[in-house]
Image (cartoon, rainbow, N blue to C red; front, top):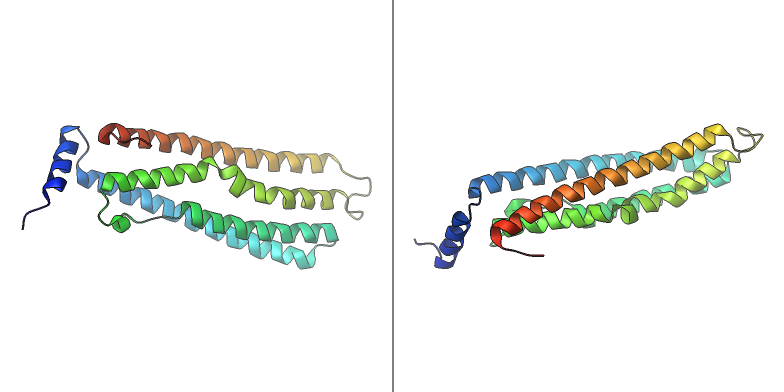
Length: 193
C-alpha cells in the first residue's frame, strides 16, 4: 500500500528544512500533553479543597460579611475550574486525527499560551471580590479587632497581593516560553499565526 503523495512531499519538505525527526516531535507532544494533564489535575484538586474549605466557612465563620465572602470564593472557584477546563484542558496527541503533527502541536501551544496570557481575568480576578470582602470582614470583626484594622491585616493584604502577582508573573513567563516554541515551529514549517 503506497502512502499519499502529498503526505510524502510534506514529510520530505520538513526533512529538508532540518526539522527534528517526527518521532521526537511525537514524544515532545506526548510530554506536553502529560504536563498539561497533571498541571490541570493539581488545579482541580486545589479547587476541590477551596470549595470544601470555603463552603465550611459559609456555615462556621462568625461575621456575616465573612460568610458572604466565603460563598463568593466558592462561586469564583467553580468559575475558574470551568474556565480552566474550557481554555486549557489537555488534548492528547492521538486526537489530532489527520492533522499534521506539527500543526496539532502548534495549535495546542497557542491554546495554552492564550489561556495563560489572559490568566488575570479568568483565574485571578474572580477571587478578588471575595478575598477583599473576606479581609474586610475579618478587619472589622469586633471580637478579633476591637481597635479596627492593624498591621496583621496589612500584612495579610500584602501577602495575598504578592501571591496573586507571583502567579501572574510566573504565567507570563510561561507565555514567553510557549511563544518561543510556537516561533520555532513557524520557522520550521513556514507557518504564521
